[in-house]
Amino acid sequence: MKHYFTRFSLIALITVFALSLAACGKSTNTQPAATASTAPAASQQPAAQANGKITVQDATGTLELPKKPERIVAMEFGFTDILVTLGVQPVGVADDDSPDLLMDSVKAQLKTYKSVGSRYEPNIELIASLKPDLIIADINKHKNAIAQLKGIAPVLVLDDFQADYNQMLKNVGIIAKAVGKEEEGKKRLAEHQAKVDAVKKKLTATNLRVLPAVVNPKGFFAHSDHAYSGSFLAMLGYTDPVKNAAAYPQITLEQLVEANPQVLFLMPTEKETIVKQWETNPLWQKIDAVANKKVYTVERRDWSLSRGFLGSEKILDDVMKNLGQ
Image 1 (spheres, rainbow, N blue to C red):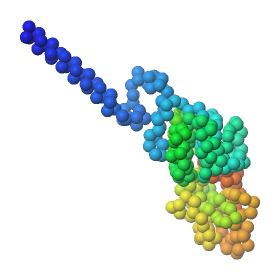
Image 2 (image 1 turned 60 degrees about the vertical axis):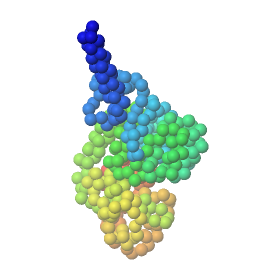
Image 3 (image 1 turned 90 degrees about the vertical axis):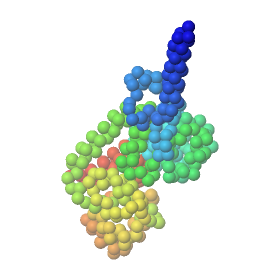
Image 4 (image 1 turned 135 degrees about the vertical axis):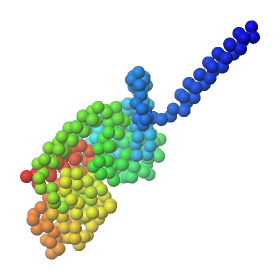
């Protein structure tokens, strides 16, 4: 009898120990599926999809969405570019109260949306009234509004305003996952890369110093190879003449002469800019781009604002038109 109870107790202890191990294993496994060192077993994937949760890594950490978002507010033109490219319609867009700042190709794919005001000072009450289930914001431009936005809906925080071309590509992947369009994102990336490769083969003369710049009545703002358009041109093989650590350094006419770009792509914000004043200065004619009539005017909304596939593919078109062989 004593032997029976001893055996029974041993079995009971083993059972309790096994259950404890199982419980500990479940409670301590907090690593998100996206960053786990080993892929989940195939039998686990359907269960993960069934609960509808989406986990992504953004510029501030991990964001978990309870389900695929349906009502999205885009706080930057680049985010809108990416969304419509993925076939997703935002309900709200921070368009600076000016739909004309949207690229034509973006507007062609964008249905009815509500303007939520300035990208720098978004209308928080209006955003809340749209009842979004996802807000996509910029880590730099919207840093003072992020806390308020999080009180409305989950916020996907990305580096867009200071992003270069490579960061834009990463943003596409993050947004695609967040909105449940990963496969569409991969397919569109392949199409985009094919377009880039095709143009690069045709650009035989890329040993040029090429500078894109936003110009307004008060200043000349170079877009270095740390900025979106500058880094895109560097990817194509051109050289950044300003060599500045800042993305958008404001430079003087004297500094521009010293940098001496061989090609200028100017993005005016208004019809008359500081360039009109500089054209009366003899120094202007000393710039190789000016002397060789290689100064081109392009749309700021295409080259600077719409940091996405549609924006970069318009840059490809403009480069081919003006510098293609």
